[in-house]
Length: 357
Ligand SMILES: Cc1ncc(COP(=O)(O)O)c(C=O)c1O
Image (cartoon, rainbow, N blue to C red; front, side):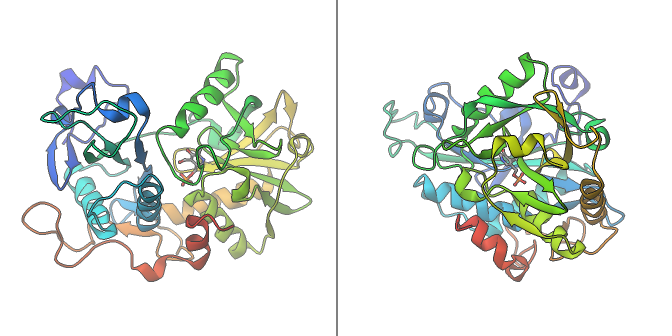
C-alpha cells in the first residue's frame, strides 16, 4: 500500500503509508492537509510522538507503544489540550495504521495540534478558540544518523545553543516548538561538518542531542543526565537503563560537565530515530579509541535483539501488529483493546514520564 510511483519521486522516503489516521478515521495521505492560518503554523502549538515499528519473525512489532502514547497524553496535558482520546484509542489506531500500511517496519508519527475553525477563525496567541486536530502517519525510516553510524559512530560537537530551560519550554513535553531549539543545534552542527550537536543546560551541564538522549560511560559506569538537565524523558533512554540492569551494569543519573564528555571512555546517543548510536568524537576530540566502545556494543546488541523479537524484553515492549486483537468495523475502534497491558509500564517509566527523576 505505497503511494503511486509519481508521488514516490517527490518525497524523500519512498515508502510512506498512503493512509493517515485523522480524528478517528483513516483518510488518504493526500487528503491530510491543514489551512495555512492554522494556529500551529504560527505559534508552534503541537505535541507529537515518534515510535518505531520493527520487522520481526512474527511480523511488524511496535516498540513500547503504550509508553509513547502515555508521553503523548502527558505532553497534551501540559499544554492544556483537552480532548476525549484515551490511550487505547491511540494504541489501537497505530496498530491498525501499521496493518493497513502493509509495511514490515516503519516509524509512526502521532501529532496533536491547534488548527483553524474556518467558520469562526481565530488568529491570536490564545490557543483556546482553535480546535484540536489529531493525525497519525507512518513511513519507513532508515538509520537516522546514517547507515554507518550504528557501527562506526558519529562525530559531534557541543552546541553554542543552550537547551530549553524547565520554566520556559518544558523539555519533558514533546512539543513541536521545542524543536526550533533542536533545529538551531542541528543546523549549527551540520554547517560545521558534524553529524549532531550536544546541548548543555542553562547551568552548563550536559543535556542532550537535538533529537537524542546521551549516555557517558566512564570507569565501567553508565551515566546519563537527570531529567532536571532539561532532557526529554526518552523511551529509549529508559530502555537503555533497563538493559543495563539486565546486563549488571551500574547506571547513574547525574549532572555531567562538558569536559567529562571529552575524557569519557565511551559515549552514545539513544532515541527512537537514532536507536543506539555511538559517538566517536566530540569537538574533534576522539572518545576512547575513536571507535564504538565495548559497553556501547553490548547495550546496542541487546537492544537490537529485543527490538527484532529475538530476545525477551524486560517488559512487554513489543506489540505484534498481526497478533493484536482485530479492530472493529469502523477501522480502529476495538472492542477488545490491543497494545501492551498497563502492567507492562515499569514503575521507572511512570516516574520518568511524570518528570520526577
Ligand atoms: C530532544 C529529544 N531527546 C531525546 C529523544 C529520545 O527520546 P525517545 O527515546 O523517546 O525517542 C528524542 C526523540 O524523540 C528527542 O527529540
